[in-house]
Image 1 (cartoon, rainbow over the protein chains, first blue to last red):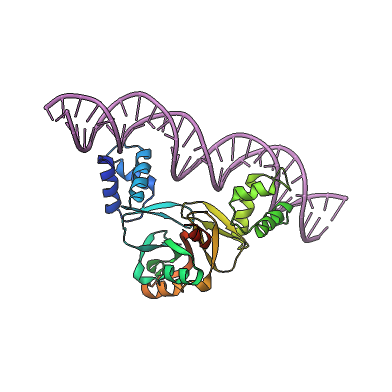
Image 2: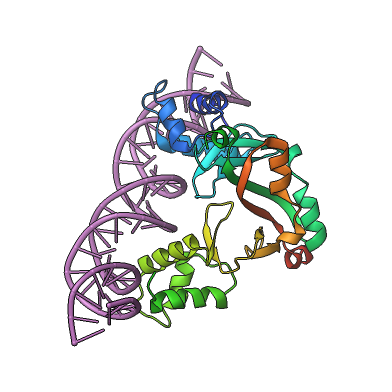
Length: 126
Length: 126
DNA sequence: TTCAAAAGTAGTAATGATTACTATTATTGT
DNA sequence: ACAATAATAGTAATCATTACTACTTTTGAA
C-alpha cells in the first residue's frame, strides 16, 4: 500500500470525527480541504483501510454502512430517537464468542453486535 | 392488511425454506408456483410482514438482507466457508441487554448479533 | 537525480438492490 | 352485489457502491 494524501486525509477525518460517518459523509467533509476528491476514492480507501484493520466497518440494523477509527474491540448502540451511534466497550458485554462456541461447537472468528434503544439524553426528554 | 394469495405464498415459502433467503431468492422460488409475481410485491410483503413482526429481517455483516420466519428470540451465525446462515438460540448466548444497560445506563430495545466463523461441517473439512 | 514499474486518482459509466409509480384487479364489509 | 380500500404486475426511478479508463504520484533502484 503506497502513501497517498487522500488516504491520509480520510483517516484523519475519521479520527477527528468520531461520529461513525458513512462514506458519503466523509466525502462531504473532505471536499472542504480537497475540493475535487472523488467519491470512488473515498470508498476505495475505506475498503482498503478496513481490510488492513486500520478502521472498522459497521453495518447498522437498517443496512447503512458506517466507519469507525476505533479499532479496539467494541460494539455499537444506535439511539432510536437521535440516531447517534455510540461505542459500547467490550468490557460492558459478556463474552459472547466463548459462550456460543461452547454451546454450539461453532468456531467463531467475528462478532458484530448492534443494539438499539434510547440513549441517556433521550431517556431524559421523555 | 387484507388477505392476498401472494402474501400467503411468500410466508409459506419462507416457512418451507428455513435457509434465511433473500428477497430475490424468495422471488425465484415463488416463480415456479406464480410465474408472474412481481419482485416489488415480494419486497412490499416482506417489509409489511417484518413490520408486523411475522418475519424477521436480518442484515448480514456484508450488508446482505435475509428473511427468517423464526420469530422466537434468536441470533445468527454465517459460515465463512459455505455461507450458510445458522440460527443461534437465545439460550446459547449470555444476556447482553441486561448487562449493557446496567453498565451504560442505555435503554435497550433491540439487539442484533451476527457471528461469523466456521460451522461444524466446514471445520471437519480442514 | 532520473526513470520506469506499480499503485493511486478523478471522473464517469455501470451495476445491483430496493423503492416509487400507475393503471388494473382482488378482497371485504355492508 | 357493490363501492371502498388494499394489493398487484410491470415498469421506471433512486441510491449506494463498484468498475473502468486515461492520467498522475509514489517509490526504490540504477
